[in-house]
Length: 115
Image (cartoon, rainbow, N blue to C red; front, side, top):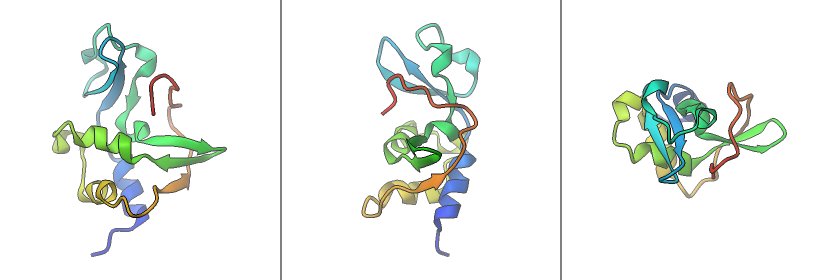
């Protein structure tokens, strides 16, 4: 069965968990509750994983960012994050451009320290 861009986007929207930027370590970390981040992660940096993987390209268009997805894949908690095969395939397929779609973020991305 072929995996389409729509399958990949739907898989990204089904991601679970939260990402926050750890100020002292200067890295993004993943947790499954807002309460588990601690004081070194400002509350305004917390984003659902399903929003974190999208970055704004221009007015109303967003790209599904491979580097942000890779950060989630490095956590090795696929089941908890709900990472499915379409996302693994998308990250591996660097020979095709990132998916760019018209999309409205549910929670605005924070500009601080997000690539």
